[in-house]
Length: 56
Image (cartoon, rainbow, N blue to C red):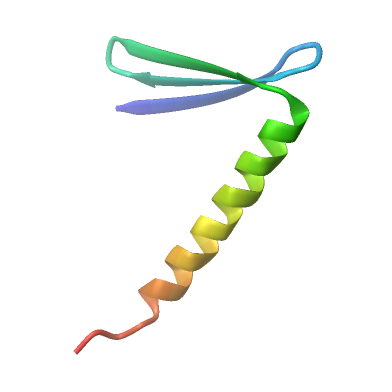
């Protein structure tokens, strides 16, 4: 099972992705975190729209 944690450090956002015994840590500055948030939001909106498109 995959686990994603988001933690705040003094001046960074820390993302920890755990999958089994593997762990990846990303430390993002505020601008990088905002860009990631915006990109993720856009991708999720696109995904929701594609779910409603009927393919014949």
